[in-house]
Structures are given as structure tokens and as C-alpha cells.
Image (cartoon, rainbow, N blue to C red; front, side, top):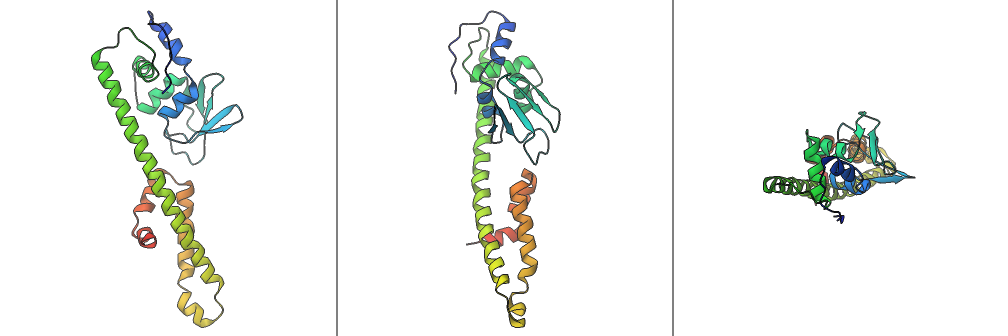
Length: 207
């Protein structure tokens, strides 16, 4: 967490302006679930606010702004937090940002501090769950890739009618494996979860 050494701020406008100038990529890393990738002076990630199969959310750290070319949402880091955490009130988003990045506010109540702490705990739990899911997804992808290579090798070795009789069923399995691997590469979270839960994938990955 980045800590900023700032004085107590007497006016709300000052608070908004200071929060808007927080390190934008650090704010995005904290509140967005996907991996950020740098492309020149810009950063990109898959947009969590709609079904996004390729990175369409672009971060512009030079102007501390963002825009999604898929769903047309965008704005400042305050708008980003409001969208990411489903917050309706900009002041609440500002207070959360201030609390997370060490900006001192003179009028934060005990109840607000407790609320922000709870939000941060939920955010941490979500990130931990996403990390575990990524690890599991990668593990299964590697196993299925090995199964696919084994099937492909066996099919390439078919030479006779007897081979077809014993191994011909693999011709039906190969395209299914290709579809599963493609889903794990490019599918939505819901599609990936459905694949990982399928009995066929569980059977293929059984040790």
C-alpha cells in the first residue's frame, strides 16, 4: 500500500483533487481483478464491467484516466472505484481511496472506518479467490494439454484397420479437448467454471 504524507485537508474540493492524483496504476491494481499489461505509455486489461474476451479497458496514467472501448465506461480513478465496487456516492469512493492510500481526512467517523475495513477485507478475499482459481485453472490446462498431445500422437500413429478399431474413438475426443482448451484460454469466467466442473474434464484430469 502506498502511503502519502499529506496534511489534514480542510475542504472537500481539495480532497477530491488530491485523490484524483493518486498513482493511477496502483489504484487500478488494487481494485481491478484482471492482470494489467503495459503497452507503451498505456496499460490495458480485460474490462470486468462487461463480458470482455480481449483487453478493451485502457488506462492512461499520464492523465490519470481510463476508458473501456467495449462498454464506453470511463473517467477518473474515483469513477473506477465506483464501478469496481458498485458504489453510488462519489464521496464514499473518495473516502475509501483516501483510507486505502493514507490520505488523512479530518471527519472520518468510526463507522466509516469500520465500513472501509470490511470492504477491504472483501476485496482481499476476492483477490485470494481469484488467485487460487488462476492456479487451479493453469494446473488443469497443463494436464489437458498433455492429454491432448497424447491423443494427437496416438492418432498420428494409426496405420491399420486394427489401429482404427482400437483407437478410432479418439477422433471424437480430440475436437472436444480442443474446445475445452480454447475455452480455458479465451472464455469468460462462467464458461471456464462450467468446463472445470464438467465430469468429462474431472475424469481426464484424474490422477
